[in-house]
Amino acid sequence: MRRSSFLIGGAAVSGLATLSARSRALAQETITEPFANGARPLGSFPQKRPLIVLTSRPPQLETPFRLFNEGVFTPNDAFFVRWHLAGIPTKVDGRAFRIKVHGLVDNELALSIDDLRRGFEPVEIPAVCQCSGNSRGFFNPRVPGGQWANGAMGNARWRGARLGDVLKRAGVKAGAVQVRFNGLEMPVLPTTPDFIKALDMDLATSPDVIVAYEMNGGNLPLLNGFPVRLVVPGYFATYWVKMLDDIEVIAAADQNFWMKTAYRIPAVGDGCIQPGQTTPTTPITKMRVRSFITSLADGDKISGGRRRVQGIAFDGGSGIARVDFSSDGGATWTQAALGADYGKYSFRQWSVALDAQAGRSYHLACRATAHDGAVQPATACWTPGGYLRNIIESLSVSAG
Amino acid sequence: MRNTSILGAAACAAIAAAALAGSAVRAAAVAAPPNPNVTVSVTLPAERQLFKDGAGADLARAKCQICHSSDYVFTQPPMTRAQWLAEVTKMKNVYGAPLEESQLEPIAAYLVTQNGKE
Image (cartoon, each protein chain N blue to C red):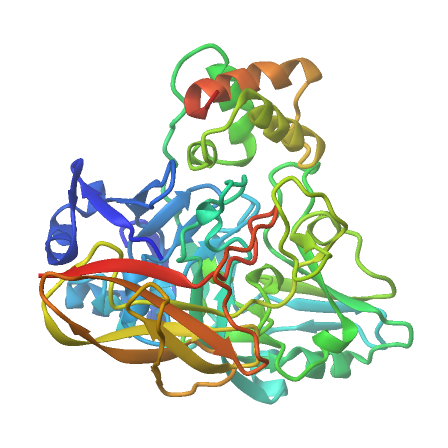
C-alpha cells in the first residue's frame, strides 16, 4: 500500500499536521494518490462527509483510506459512491417507491418498502461492498477507467428481505435462468445502455442475497441507493444495484451491455493475464482475498518502541482464516491476532505488535489467508479492465 | 451539508446532531433511525469545468459533457493520441455519444493537449 499524500496550498504535509489543517483548509484540500494524475479534491456531497472526488457527474467518491482505521464498519456518510450514468434522481419518495417483480413469475408484485419490512423476515448481514475497479490506479501498465486508489470499498451491516423470499412470493415459473435487476439510475441519452445487472437463479435465491432497506442501522444515503439496493455478499459491488425498482425473472442469460460486454474478466486460469494478451472473458463474480494496514501509511515517521499495528482483511465470502505480518519486506512473517468476527463477508480487523528501533526503517506488509485456502499473491494481478487487484500490500515507515 | 435538503424529521435530527458535534468525523456516529417513508431530496454540487480553451475545446465541452463531467478526462492516466481516439470512439460506438466520424480525431487531438503523452 502506498501512501496518499495530502497537499494543502501546494505544500505537502502529513500526519497530525494534516488533520489539524483539515478543518481550516477543507475547501482547498487535495489528496494526491501515488500514481500519475492522482490529484483529487475533497468535495462536499449531500449526506456525506468530505470524500475524495474522483468524478463529480455522475458522482464517484472515494473514502479517504485513514478512515478504515476508525472501526470495522464504514459509516454511511463516509461510504464510497459510484454511479455509472448521470441520470440519477435527486429526489426520491420512499413512501411512493415500488419494486416491481415480474417476468417468469406466477404473480407480479409491486412492493413498497413497508411491504419489504413487514411482509418478509428481516435479515441483517455485515458485508464488504467493493467496487470491481477498486485500486485500478495502481495497475501497471495503467488501464482506462475510474482511477481509484484503495478506498472504493466499505463494510456495513445491511438489513433487508431475502431476495429468495421475494421471488418465492412471486412464484418463479419453470424455465427461469436468471434474475435481472434495474434501478432508477438512467442514462442521459437513450442511445446509452441502461445499467442493468443479472444473477443466475441459484445465486439469486441463495439465503444471503438481500434487498436491503437499512445500512448500519439507518437509511441508505441517497448516493448509496436510497431507499433500497441489492446486496450480494462476497460479490463485487457491480451487482449491488442501487435504487432497485425492477426485478425480472428471465428465461435466458442476460445479454445487456453491462453483463455481456462490461465488467468482465479473462476466462483463463485465475483471471490474471499478461498485458496485451487477449482471451475469452466471463462476468466478474466474487471478490479476492485482500488485507491492508490501516494504522500506518507509507512514509510515516514513527517513534521507537513497541506499538500496535492494525489493519483489515476480507475475501469473497469464505471468511478470513489468518493474517500474517512482516516488518522486513516479506522475509519473515508473524501471525497477527484477529479481531471480533462479524461473519464471513465482513471486514476482519487484525493487529500485531511492532518493536521499532529508533533510526531504523521498516518495510511492512500483510498477507491474508481465507478459509477457502486462498492467499494473497506476491505479484500483482493484471486484467484489461483493471479488476481483481489483491497483491500483498506493503508500506515503509521509519522510526526516529 | 449546505447543499443538502432533506425532508423527514429523522434525517433533519441527524444533520442537526452532526452540526452540533462540529466535526465531520463525529457525524459518522449519528445514523438516522431507519425510516424509509420519507422523501429525500438533495442538490449535487456544481461540476468543475476543467477543459481549457484551445482548438477542439468547444467540441469537447459540447459532446463529452453531455453525459459526464470533465474530470473524467483529467483523472485518467496521460494517454497517447491513439489511446484517446480509442476512448472517443468507444464513447460513440459503445455509449452512443452523438458524434460524427469527422469529430472523433479533433476531439482526440484536443484531449491529448489536455491530458496526453507521446
